Length: 289
Image (cartoon, rainbow, N blue to C red; front, side):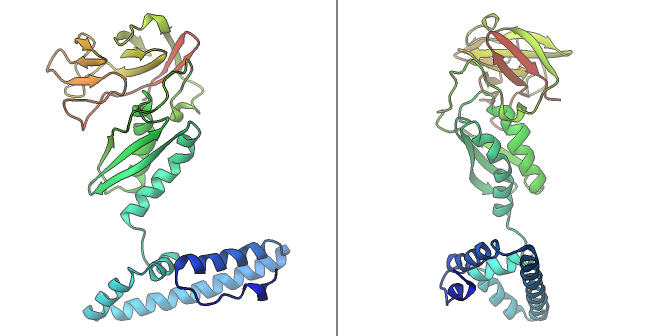
């Protein structure tokens, strides 16, 4: 195959043009370094010329409201939009920036058989949902705060409310050993807290870890850990009644799911999670400071 065989013909779709470019790029990879450098310099020169031409054209059109309206209509075309985005003349949309932020955490989630999907965008709020092994995992609250929420906040400061909606609850929770994906790189700071069998099944165990008052709960061999503080006023909740994995704050009646930390009374808040891992019969906690 040579460059003559790959001369682009007229295309009707963006995918067709992109395919032509990718085939040419594949050909260039077989060339020596000097040839590749020459092609790259040639490409940059053309792109800089085109980009400057587009910028001057748009500056000229801004003086005419009708022309600017026609330009906005043209941008809806996928080819026009892609080329202007390539030259950084159009900034990425909010949806694109949110998806890019989620793409940044997906590899870590995928390593545990999970994923996250964007459910809705209603500025200043978005909704996301965990899928796969991350759906229903008791460590998902930590994953949400340490990974997904942080990534979106950094990429999209105009989004102030990032809400996690429930999935189908299909995550795996039968492993004796687990660790939240975003705790995998945490080597130091783990505290041996208790034995697994010391935590009441479906109930709570109050412990002090590194000077912090926490509560632990378990379903089988899967353990969750949260700050012993109601999200309402910060009062301790370990004295509250527990039924079917739900604890009710003894002070003002706020109810929390002990597996996820989700507040069932006010879904926009939740208990502060801490990292947990279970190895054999040992339960270790790393505080999320």
